[in-house]
Length: 325
Image (cartoon, helix red, strand yellow):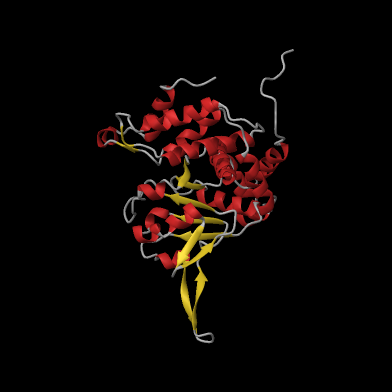
């Protein structure tokens, strides 16, 4: 019998077990939506933020809440509205008459998992308040810098249908999200199961079934393991070719930045670790590429008018490149 060429160098059984335990906890309430849960967990391990897009009622907000409940970390939720101010997100300085000085009162962004509902409902001024905190995990107010405790992940949702009263997210803001997950309707069988679950138990009882199964210290240790996942030079070349091809494709007006290349590599490493492998395969890269690129590229006006989707163009690009073996 031939020996396995890919000899396992790192024991990832504890990481695999932790990920499965998280999936089981979330699965107590959520039916289906495997890809959304898979990518959310991969983003946690890769230390990246997630944008979830889907019509109302497909469990976008619920899944983010369950994720925070499964990990023993802080959780806050911010509902973005057109009248929301930056200080409502990051906090504000309040005068303390007893000490005759201003004291900084932290806003809801000071948490571990921050759910921003309908992120495209707030104006650019409020969205800009997220720039520094999402990239550098710190906030500067009145010349004072405040660091956020790890882990820190922003999970933002947006509704693709209703555009009235919304503000398009600037490209610089979109680029700070590791993944954009498109959530679709459940299948007939899954929806049947959702109704059965609600018939047998109310939502409050189901939420009480979910308990923390991972500590912040364990999550930090898992992230270190993910960073150590091996990736061959030819696969790094495969990633850079994919991203470079978005910059000179006839259907694309604006290509992806080097941040996208880093995102694909980190996402592929997380996916490989979740499957118990200490090395990245081309399939890991192909799986995460649409989620990393779909919000980072802008199609030409002609292609948009034709109704072409970014996912179709990404598929064309990947299929046009020889996959390294």
